[in-house]
Amino acid sequence: MDSDARTKLEACVVREWITGEFQECRRIFFLDPGASIHDLEKVFSSGDAVLLPSEFDVNYEAVKTISFGGQMLEAGDEFFFGKQCVELQDYLSAAFVEIVTSTVVRFFDEDGWQAFLDDADLARYTGVFPSSLLDRHVLLADREALSKPFELNVPRSIRLSADGTISLGLQGKELGRLQDLQTLLETPVPNIAMLSGEVATRSIEAGLASRSWIERYFNAIDLMKMLRLENGRSKISGFGWSYVEDGQSDSDPLASDPFLFESSKGLMLADITSLRRQLLTPHAASVVAIVQTSSSSELATERVAEYLNVSTEKAAAMCFEASQELNVHLGNLNNVAHVSLIVGER
Image (cartoon, rainbow, N blue to C red; front, side):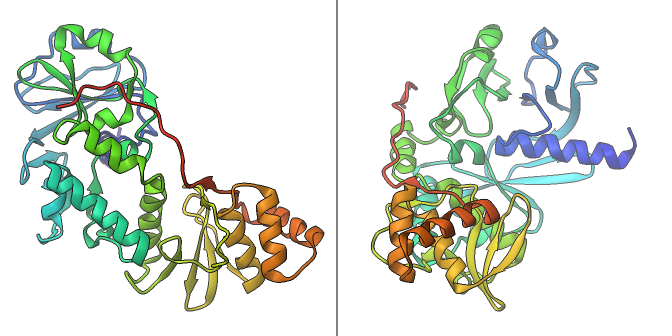
């Protein structure tokens, strides 16, 4: 593997372990300095990766093996791999420090967690996003767990500590001891367990259960970065601005749906997955806004017919066309139910 490919692989593995958003790896094992590697190879399988302190002169042939220096335990810690340096910061402090290198932010206590929720609410109701998360150097730890907190999955970001404990990711729940690793790897846990190492589980559960739009919020941040939109001045539907305000909305747009926003060129629709952007007419924008905030095709049709003063048949056709041509979908009901968690509380 040439040096460029190696650098890309290392960055990809580190990013996936930090965010929990897996694309290239099946599972990633992170060993703190001093952690035991005894019999570790027995649990590896195809697609796995391991992040090893440079003190270990080991290269597992069956998995992606990456050597690192430093550590990622406390705010201010630095972590080195290849020619890259990543700094760890508390979410609450990140807004007040100068970001000069790649930086990971996580929650070290209840204050940091509450600051995250307050920032998300501010963006939701005013369109002003936290500057730290808009910085291209910043990664939010365990973003996947925040986006889908109540899904059950087997552990994928696994941390082995020097004292033999096994935990999840950067800030997750302690699962057990090294001798039970194989069993722990086969036991599904809710994604929220990735976050409950430093903050009480119930605080996290309550904060995310009432904010089913968090994943959409992260995608809006990606949109802001991608298009370099001006924070607090750019209008993004669902974040301090709605193109259609008819009082009949009963849903939030799907997290992955394209974003309707206002630009200097007019009303635009942007898909952060396909990177597709297109200019919309006011009528088309109205249909998009209504479809995305309606829980049923019947409601969307009624709203479009009333808002644009067209027949029901015409309104239904316009909604269908928006779905087929613009890849927009009916929304999620605002009162999305969530599963009860079976994880220990602090």
